[in-house]
Length: 352
Ligand SMILES: Cc1cc2nc3c(=O)[nH]c(=O)nc-3n(C[C@H](O)[C@H](O)[C@H](O)COP(=O)(O)O)c2cc1C
Image (cartoon, rainbow, N blue to C red; front, top):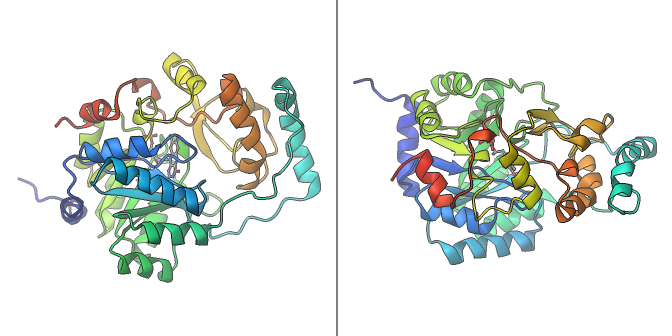
């Protein structure tokens, strides 16, 4: 019998420490999809639920964590977007006007006033991080950047495990050097935002299993793999490639407990749209179903400004049942998804 890869051995310990019975992480899904109910359901069924808290205020983080804890005593993760290594440059008035002009017809179509940037474009990471420390989840995961030594020390001091996100080998190495407890590598098929940092120069958009093999063979820290994992065979292949855990987002989009809106669910169920990477909704590359708004934007503001500029339109579109203006994040494997309870979906990914 082959000896397990060092990374797999290491996370064996982490899996035991967390008391997981299945090697599956529910991907954090910010923006209302990863509800506390969904997070708790996955953790309760033996996976690791992750609360996508990036768009929540510190008070909302505390409330969401309390809601998860009211439903399960098992461990779960809280996830934030770390401050990027390159600070966003505030857009000029001309850039804002150009980006708003592209959204204007969609606003008019829904009877909304013309698009305008809100005063607050994003939550303050420092305040969110303080709320996470206070809430003390078993795991803190982050994307879009690195944490400084002070953050990592604060997490360690509270017994919170840290997991960073990389889209290529260089970023994975950097996170390991920083001292995270595990690294999530995101293959190019993944739904949602590319989780790396900088301007995307290090994003390999690699095949999930290829990236897993290279990173697991190189790093000493445990590797979690995300991107297009939709079936039991996919999870097994990820483990065989050297991963310690498989992280699945799209597979849970149609879970009964997910906050996925009705038009979003319908677009997923139809299975007709291809997926593609777009900057249109947030100013950062993300994979989702190709739709009208995604195609109509050619001069998005940088993240987080575009995200703030499109927020009102996305909320109104969900309410009005208009999938054409929604960020329909989905991985390349989305057609293999199905409606079921979170526990039922987990059973298909890794039977009890
Ligand atoms: C709707 C949606 C929202 C997401 N939000 C986050 C997030 O808040 N934080 C994060 O680290 N990753 C987020 N991701 C990316 C996932 O962590 C993961 O990389 C991806 O779902 C894996 O690919 P899959 O969707 O094919 O399973 C999101 C993905 C989706 C589909």
